[in-house]
Image 1: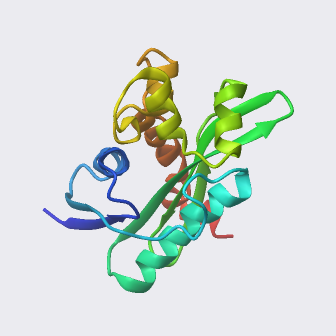
Image 2: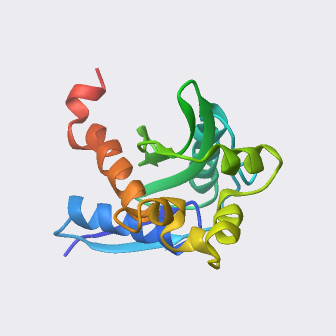
Length: 178
């Protein structure tokens, strides 16, 4: 059975599990070695705005490519923004095989204004949610999305969907590389 090495730009078990799930679905005939690695984002711990969030994921993948060898590199960066319709959290995902890179984005999870205001004051979403819901280290579990959807969705499910969609250019390179 052929093997694939996938590096994830984080040691967060939620992010590693999401990547492993997607690559298992896309490459069922392969043995996967999916590892989480330290990879700096170069952005604040709690990115605010779409640009910083995307750049954080891109920086993590660039770091992995520069320092490690793998078949695929991926990163997920969660951020938040004040949109015209209200505050929300979301994630950007980046996948690369070292030659081709694809960027994807998750859906928005509406945030209470009071939660977003704490992010503006310098707090991280995971810590704010832990305080609000009396949980511990929720960012390495279901995340804010789990808490705010009564666990009908999770942080991992959000990353999984975004990663699934970001794989499209690798499925059809003839369409994307024109």
